[in-house]
Length: 146
Image 1 (cartoon, rainbow, N blue to C red):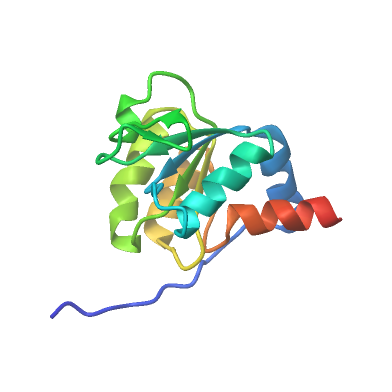
Image 2 (cartoon, rainbow, N blue to C red):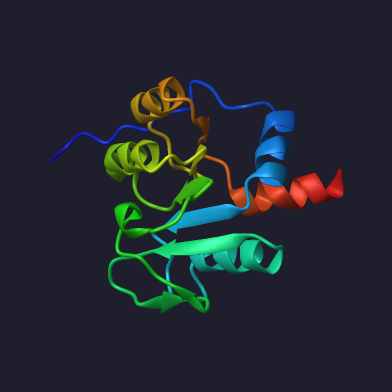
């Protein structure tokens, strides 16, 4: 059985940088967006869409989620994406980060509980902002309260 490790983020941007990310980047590809309304990814996608973000579902098993065309992977998206929001296990993160870098995304966002420091370092070296183990919906709600 493989050893399970729980990484902690070595670095996350301060609150003001997260605010800037949320204010300036409005097209969000959500990798692992579920069509099931009870799933966190679905709730986050709906919230972002309801708050003026363009969401881009990425889920190979779906044609459409939340009224938006769904893509099987990041490479299939035919237009620029600002943020790649990841709802996948940590071990699935490195190739997603590679694709985010290749497609010219500006931000890699790993949801609550998702951390991959090596992939984050690679993204930062390529010029992307990286947020790990934070919920984009919660951070947006906090920004609105300030």
